[in-house]
Amino acid sequence: MPLDFDSARLPNPGLRPEHEEWRTQLRRFIDVEIMPYAQDWDEAGHIPIELWPKAAAVGLLGLGYPEEFGGISEGIDVWHSWIANEELARIGVGGIPASLMVHGIGLPPVINWGSQALKEMVAPPVLAGDKHIALGITEPGGGSDVAQLATTAVRDGDHYVVNGSKTYITGGMRANWVSTAVRTGGPGAGGVSMLLIPADAEGFSRTALDKKQGWWASDTATLYFDNVRVPVSNLIGEENQGFRVIMTNFNAERMGMAASMEALGRVCLEESVAWARERKTFGKRLADHQVIRHKIAQMKQKLNATQAYIRICYESIEAGRPSPGDIALLKVQASETMEFCAREAMQILGGIGYMRGGRVERIYREVRVNAIGGGSEEIMRDLAARQYGV
Image (tube, rainbow, N blue to C red):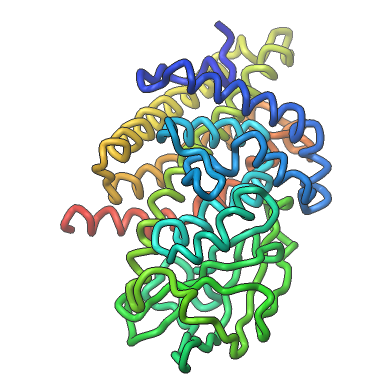
């Protein structure tokens, strides 16, 4: 069997026929509605607003969300999510799924911790692709150290008055709401709360961050809060309990990123094998040079190990026993695997790999945002060490 994206996927005994039907349906949508335009959208720096309702119609936006809000939850498990991340990674333009699926980190705090009124206001239009939500955690003065965030929310009657800023916010320019981490109490994690802030509130402003190394098609912004008044009813969870909301959210985000990074590594393997079979040097195919064959073998070895780790972590989640430490280490392994595969693929492709317009060139540029976003490799290792009592 040729070594391509699909054949490089290890068998998963958890997959049933309905999972493969989901993959087929989703792949057809991506191949028709996204693949032919992905390069142009990346160069343009945005994706068309019409893509969201189309993604909603195929079931992508609502996957795993309660049906009362327009989601699809019956019969949905972690393997559906893994497949979605794999198929979106095939595009090879990281900014497209980052922007299209940003509700995956912005909406869960509302769904899992918000009031019924908040859920009814926000979830249906977001899952229909008509409105948008983002997550506001990172600040100009700090990123992964959430306990030190400085944006404040001071209670004033039936409102909080919010002051501060957030940056590197995916989906920030398009968002109608931002699930925002704020400081309502004293220093440290115990003073953090989560607020749903409407983007049309007086005193809310934003500027685009459009000079990025990668994820060009992703809308990224800095957000500013200047005495923004937010109803107390927009509190997500309990006051000063926001750190718990954030940490719960991070596990799902990191799993999605790990699944995506492994699949991006597989794209690099697929492109490498295709080129090695076609390209000739010194009178024979690249694939006939032992050094190239060894690169391909090492890529497959690392991808196998990462796939196995992803499966173990997903099985633990499905069983109701997620391990934050293992999820953190998985994210590190996935980013290291993606980086290795991207580098080796660039070496195998040579000059053509360096030219803009190919999947490997884009993936190579997007290695670092994956290694940093959702928790940097260094923070992930430290978190895991603490989880294991070190």
